[in-house]
Image 1 (tube, protein in one colour):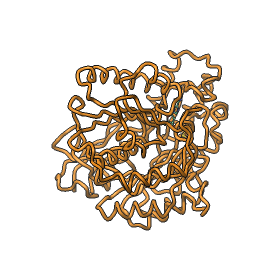
Image 2 (tube, protein in one colour; image 1 turned 180 degrees about the horizontal axis):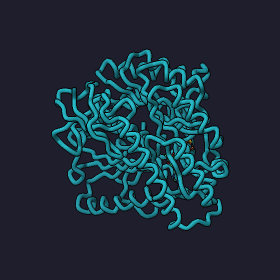
Image 3 (cartoon, protein in one colour; image 1 turned 90 degrees about the horizontal axis):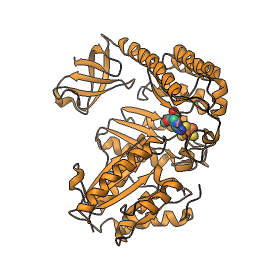
Image 4 (cartoon, rainbow, N blue to C red; image 1 turned 120 degrees about the vertical axis):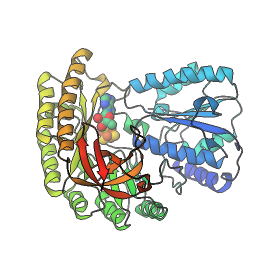
Length: 466
Ligand code: 5AD
Ligand code: SF4
């Protein structure tokens, strides 16, 4: 994708330094409020934490009430086409708000803002959007706001630059669990996926910066970190010091933080060394999200996934046998162009063999600019929906089975807050990433406690403090 405003990395790095050293005490928006709505993956959630941090340095404070905010930002996702409809539907609402309150600022950022066609659409048809910035331009937000003069401002780099260290300038949503970026971008180019175009090539943070951030989090009372990357186990491939993801995991483990998780792993980059490290250290959680996408070798090849069904199964079984109580979840796409009934049966067969603890399932969505969007696709949407339903039925069956296995057991649960379903209960996650609603004292929020599991549903467990 060829977007304007390309700058070189050095210039951008200077810019970020400038913002942090010279701008952070200029609170030009003191007394104003912002509201941010985030779509998509954890990476976007974490980007929003960064945007919030930056806005607060300008004097903004967060508002939870859309209608009462001075600056409304949509942090968008581009992974599937319906995300586009959702965002533009919501923008229609914001346009009305702005008609009533012309002072309102509207911002749009995230992966959709990296799409050339979306930027064009905004320029031509949505003049009421004030600020648009791409995934590589977050550090520019203060400058964009400072220079805003009532005319739409767009800043989207087509090329990513070097990693910019934000020195932990995030406003994190939780003070118990934290996301920590370890790398940005993806070089895998799965043929259906837009991420390599919106997030750019793989760039790893230096391990010393990651470890410093995690030590700070630990000192500030955080109990859990989730290492984030589109493809975490490719960590370090771009670094000169040849640190691997296994090395990094080991270093993170040695910080002594109580719980470590990581998402997302690509089967192709999963090494034996990684499995050894995960099984060796108690604070690395035995939970692995390992997207398979399809069980058909034909479709896996068309997807450019770089592994066969058999290779995936070998890795899966190795993980199950070497990592105690390993819980493995996955992502599956149905209705990829050319997927036949036979191909789909291969996927069901793989699910029957793996009995995943859980899975996210999707109908293929053609994304402009990706190779798969140009592939011949003869399957009707009706047929794809049927496949999705039968897949979901199977997935839910195994997810429930996996949950039922925990009945009567004692699980270590990190309590993160009050249960959304029942305000008299507290809630948290097991080591294996199962959500538990717990009868117990609110004083346990932020602690890891022993919980006896008394009921198991498809998507959550019930328990009581012991
Ligand atoms: N269509 C459907 N699903 C997709 N995913 C990524 N791109 C597409 C697409 N074009 C799914 C994959 C990925 C998850 C985050 O989203 O399963 O693992
Ligand atoms: Fe997309 Fe594939 Fe990269 Fe995952 S590994 S972000 S699916 S290109």
